[in-house]
Length: 399
Image (cartoon, rainbow, N blue to C red; front, side, top):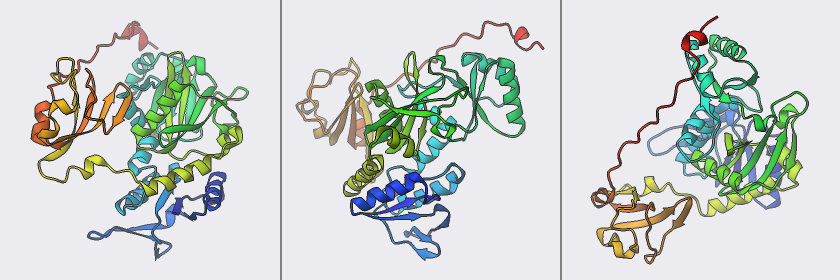
């Protein structure tokens, strides 16, 4: 395999470990400075140049895009994608994960625990937002930040309001996030590769520091990850479109609370704490995927006119409940069942003898007009009205 690592730090621990792991496995590996890659766009021929010369096309890339280079770096990754070169982390996945607000918006519609978070623009709305996330103490976060930079703990509401107003005055956008008291000074990082967690550590802040990041002096120890946390980490990574990432979680009273999905996780802390060859596992995964790359099924299967991909849910009232897939007659209607989702389990290419149950969901490919007839009307979800804070507004805004 010919692998190109996109990195502006060729001498850092993570990059050196990836190079070492690739060479041990007899792969060809190059480090390309992301800043020196030039995009060229032409009719049907997207291309890339490195230091003025056309690149030697690799089989795969591994993006290690720094926060300061997100926009240009994701454009470069997108160009590789247009050239059909495999990347475990998509440009969209990197962009989504890098923006804390966007990533939480995406995760919030799924069955994944996240800390209650608010985002406000007007200072007049800060007090209510503080109360809705649980009041002080509260965590204040810049929208973009890494290694604990731009994360502030405010122990009183008036301090939190002053910090937010000050940051707003400098055109900084911030999030207000519930302080998970039982997790103070600790978090869990799960390193996800593909569809599994390959290693996990608990990071603990030292001294008076509440941020547990290793770069802030936090201590890391290897742990056996609770299955609930492993499942949350893998699901968060897949939802974000990342196949190699670190998922940071708080250990809350209600279970895992996903804080962040990191598309360029460092290897040093987790390898030193666990003694595992994380870099080697990453290289092995990429080499395997190059042989059998993922396909965006919704893009590839919708080119035929009149055909498409659809999720068909089976409500309790459906005539299909209790029938086998074969007995439904879907195949005779030119509809093929690709996967069956039951709860959190996904059955790929289910057999025709599989009996359907209420609340099953079928991912199907076939004639659009036939599938439309099978999709029941879904009433709009009614939003639950949340009670307003009990403190009178006149008191809240009193000085």
